[in-house]
Picture 1 (cartoon, rainbow, N blue to C red):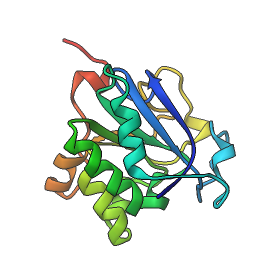
Picture 2 (tube, rainbow, N blue to C red; picture 1 turned 90 degrees about the vertical axis):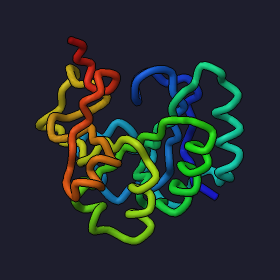
Picture 3 (cartoon, helix red, strand yellow; picture 1 turned 180 degrees about the vertical axis):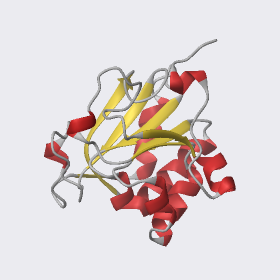
Length: 171
């Protein structure tokens, strides 16, 4: 069971294409200038079973991906890992935002490592108001990276996503 602050069924700003965005409740980072400060408190969200979220995603035939946002999805890593496995079994691309860096998560809890192992894309790093930019695809500040998680895990270090779908660079 996940603790959520909200859900958007047809997001076009949290990854390429039409996606469902799952907003978790609870965040330890409290970044200055945060877009979702209402998600910071723990214990006051709506409990939702992971299976219900898969059913919700399947209601929109145009939805091809799901993005975990927050709050901090890696603060509920066990539940989000379960959700990611269920979504991927149905063919969805799974991305997650995190205020933690890939390196921190790689050395984080076993549950955080498991969540990393079952997602496709990670947008990592805290939002930094001093590095805010409205010109970036799917990121709020220049320090944040869009990472290819399977390649990053294979390399043992952060590997930037090169897919034009995510970078917005078409040649």
